[in-house]
Length: 142
Image 1 (cartoon, rainbow, N blue to C red):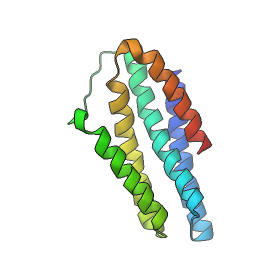
Image 2: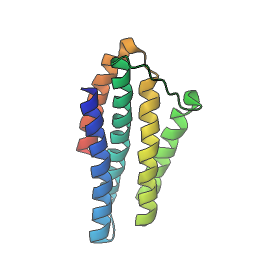
Image 3: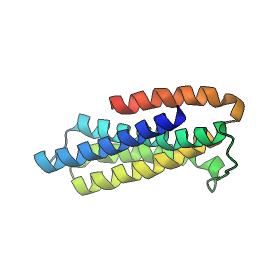
């Protein structure tokens, strides 16, 4: 199940990025609602992708440990920067800047998904899987 959620998350990221770039190429601008949907689809999809991989590794009892540097201090700044990136995306009409902001959201969401899920104990992993299942649905909705 975790592997399936990872694929759904990655598909949401790819679809969100592709939709933004396709819309920008055809219409030479992107509406605000489309920008928000692309950003949220990318952000939630990325969290789902790496979070599901971390959950799979824990549930499969694979002996693999990778801790992000400063993991205890990472989530809040990444969350704040993503909120700022979304605001900048909405305010800007530049497709180039929008692309950079969405790529930032992709990589920062990968870090967030890994860091959040990897910090959860094995006993709470069924709850994490349930949340990731919800995230995959929200990512696809966006």
